[in-house]
Length: 243
Image 1 (tube, rainbow, N blue to C red):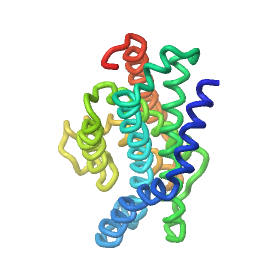
Image 2 (cartoon, rainbow, N blue to C red; image 1 turned 30 degrees about the vertical axis):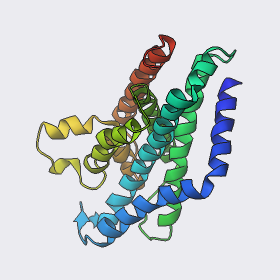
Image 3 (cartoon, rainbow, N blue to C red; image 1 turned 90 degrees about the horizontal axis):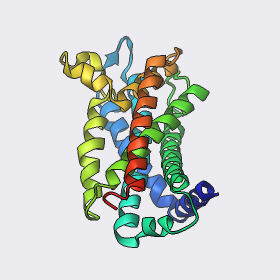
């Protein structure tokens, strides 16, 4: 019941700010498509660059949408609304509150990805999307929701949330196999970047779009990040650190 309550809160917030949320999820991807996709007339592995770019932008949308939906919201609730204090003295189990926040953030990210897929659907690229695609995007959203939840416990003020975005989301957006292939990066740095969750998400979504299948390794990396940051989040909230 606690999970459904949190999800209902997220749904109410989504309906209230529907136009703002939708517009925010569209602006950056559209700009990337115009600047990179239509401004750079190149090919990647014999395919049009748009075929490489669109899966990367879709994957990136789940990351930024999920992270943004949780990080800023949780920072405000924890620091100013004292919502976590109320949860702790309520009958709602803390784990249900945490799971609800993570699921709500991941669904927001999945919605952002859906918007991009809808916007790019008129472009005849021949890219394939199926159930595996949305499962991977949902899993990616879960990962970045847990990362956002963890980092929100480190926030000391409302202004810290944008800093986390600059430290985590912006570098991953440009480095993690979104706009340029990892093969073009220096050895050593390339291996490090390949183990980041967005890199694996882009690779798997791109493989499916080209008619291939996702890798077990990619799922393993995403599940590992999800497990690690979920445990950290639970430890923070149950030990009442930084709250």
